Image (tube, rainbow, N blue to C red):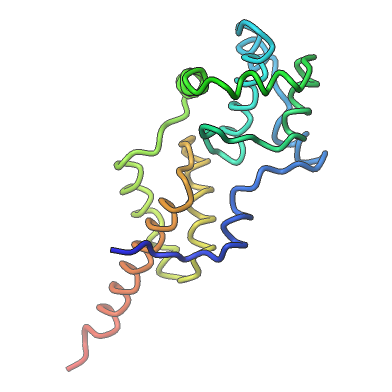
Length: 186
């Protein structure tokens, strides 16, 4: 079965964008004292900066840092400034994928952020159905899905997964509407 695309390339790019303007950086990525306490336990500037970047991305847009993925330099600079670390420390952190995964699991455990599981997939599909009954616009469904996952403190999966979930939910809504409209027809 081929992948069902419900988003345009521009919509895909805009949905989970990491904001880099000063106001958005301040709104989403200022570290609390609790955050700083956890971050300062790491050995080495590269690990402190790396775990701070991971925490920032988990909070907003709600994604996990992928292997070989580099966040915007503005975000790295903003976090490095708060930690009083040179932003070049990021290059050393990005070399070790195992550390990235360990930090991700530690952050999820510490802050109570869940992984996107099959159970989450099914639950989210059920909660999206009322929206899918009102609109078939893919971007609206994906936005509702991402907001719901943020509300639930669940890591947002990659966009193809969300697109498939929303496409399946839209199809289910369409079938339900058809059944409702044609129930009394002879």
